[in-house]
Length: 272
Image 1 (spheres, rainbow, N blue to C red):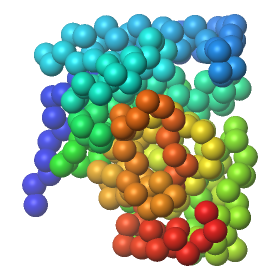
Image 2 (cartoon, helix red, strand yellow; image 1 turned 60 degrees about the vertical axis):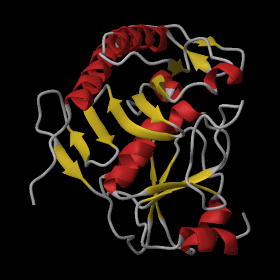
Image 3 (cartoon, rainbow, N blue to C red; image 1 turned 135 degrees about the vertical axis):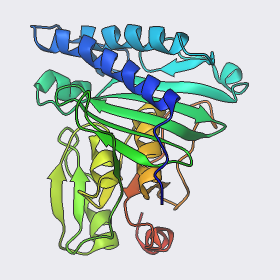
Image 4 (tube, one colour; image 1 turned 90 degrees about the vertical axis):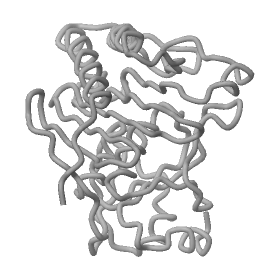
């Protein structure tokens, strides 16, 4: 069976992400200041530099769409309700990891159509590792600029299951994971949206997030994981969706690689 090619639009957005990564690394390789936003989350010059590059790149595309980004003015719910398609961006996902200089942060760019992500690019600036996908197509990995685009896919769950976790937020949700997976699991700590990418390339099985995330934290990586064969579900078992309410906070969720398992039934049986 012939493999669907990487579309011109996906290549264009990947190039924008690589340009943003270059701007991030300029700051990363220097001393930098950390400021605090109103919600007390950290922000650096790298976040703002990447934002500038991404906005300029998206504005140069043929289709002109609204952009919703963590580092720009947040459009009101009244305004967003009129959007059928828009870009959802986190210029630097994992600012805490950036500040720690552990390399586990990403550039996230997603295209939302209706309430679902239909194109997603996730790029780790330090390694150059890029993940990308479109609705109806394959999920891809490009290990560095200029490398071949390789198709990726999730795997059947292993025993014991490998759980992708967060370095910055610890083991919140361990009790629920035991109910869903059993007592024996292997933990793989990882920052930012790279946790989804571990699942998408068959290197982990489950990522449970209990606690706050925003829609720009998950959309691009959800698109990649779904195209690779996985799913992102809220804790009722419903697919994670976007731009459906005033708040931009996601519900708590679980990302899974093996969709042959009835995760909805497991969640209903668990003490969520």
